[in-house]
Image (cartoon, rainbow, N blue to C red; front, side, top):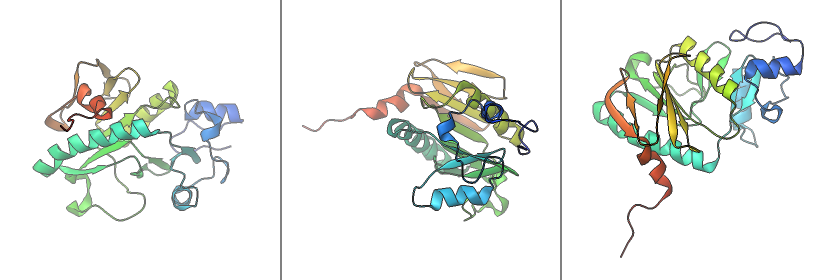
Length: 222
C-alpha cells in the first residue's frame, strides 16, 4: 500500500498503516474507498452522504473524527470567546469542528476550532468550496478519549509542516492544555492558567476555567 505525500513511504500491512496514522483505532478507518486510495472528493462524499461521516484525509486514508457532545460544547465556547476578539478587530475568520481544510495536497484536517487570518485568504473573502484550501494560523483540538497520543503527535507534525503557527490541545478530563509553537516545542497550561494568542492573536487570553464553566448554568433566575 503506497501512502500519501505526508506519510513516510510504502506500508506492507494494516498494522503499519495504523502506526503511521498515529495508532488510530481500526474502527475509525473507513474501508470504502480502500485505505491508500481516498481523495478529497471521498471526504466530501462521506460528509454529504446519508451517514454524515466527518473524516479527515491522511495518506490516502479516510479517518473519522471523534468528538462527543461535551467536547463539542467546549469547542463552541472557545470559538465564541475567540470569535468576539477576532470580530471586534477584523482579524480573520473562525471555523468549527466541521471546517474541512486542505492543508497540503492529499492532507485534509478539521481542527475543532481554526483561526485563519485575512492575510491567508486570497482577496480577503472566504470561499464556498466544501473543503477550504487554507492553513490555519491557530488550530485547536479538544481532546476526546478516542484520540491517541501518537495521533496527536502526527497532527502536530502535519499542522506545522503545512504552516500553522500555533496549536492548542485542550484536555477536558484534566481541564488542562498544551500550547505548541512547533511539533516538539510546547508548554503546559494548568487548570488555573490561561491560553494566550501569542504572536498569532496578540492580546488575546482565555482562562481555561472559563471554557469548562460552560457545562454549568451561570445565572439562575429568581
